[in-house]
Image (tube, rainbow over the protein chains, first blue to last red):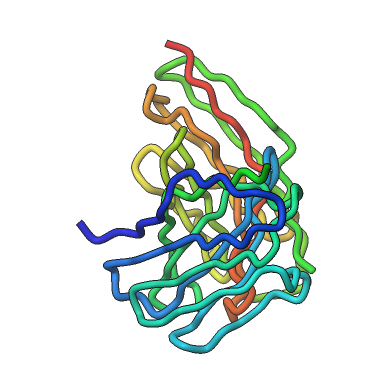
Amino acid sequence: DAMVIQNPRYQVTQFGKPVTLSCSQTLNHNVMYWYQQKSSQAPKLLFHYYDKDFNNEADTPDNFQSRRPNTSFCFLDIRSPGLGDAAMYLCATSINRVQETQYFGPGTRLLVL
Amino acid sequence: AQTVTQSQPEMSVQEAETVTLSCTYDTSESDYYLFWYKQPPSRQMILVIRQEAYKQQNATENRFSVNFQKAAKSFSLKISDSQLGDAAMYFCAYMTGGGADGLTFGKGTHLIIQP
């Protein structure tokens, strides 16, 4: 089945140690999104790619970066994780940006020690 | 900036009964889309129903329907004949017509189904 896959499902890292979260999709969608969802809070958009065009939200910390080497894969890099970065990270895809339904992966829960 | 408010952190309903989840939003846009997403425990978020703001008719998907009140900026979800599999976190979400800002979510409502 076509889907959005996130690996790993759980990630533990140390304070200040770079970490990379992975997302892949078999839907062949043009847009890939990264959301951060802290405990008991709403998911918040960090950035998205429309094809190779990167779009960063104004309030996304510089500590967060992303790469999309091809249509299928997108990575979230956290250069120096802080305790406040512990959260669920959700990847989503859509065919296009406008009005299209977004399809979500199961998320990666990040723990920072 | 757009905001989405879900005032019910948790709701409980008896199996086979009807429940309504509330959502209000704030926007100055005229072209936008509204969504309800369901997030079961430890599983991915899936779309329940969507509504285009320019459509006056309320969206319906089987047991799920919305009450879209554009002037009041209200977008509630009604679940009829509640089933155990409906237990999940429900998120109301907003997207502008341009879509460039992604989805703006509410904080969610945890729905419990009592057998």
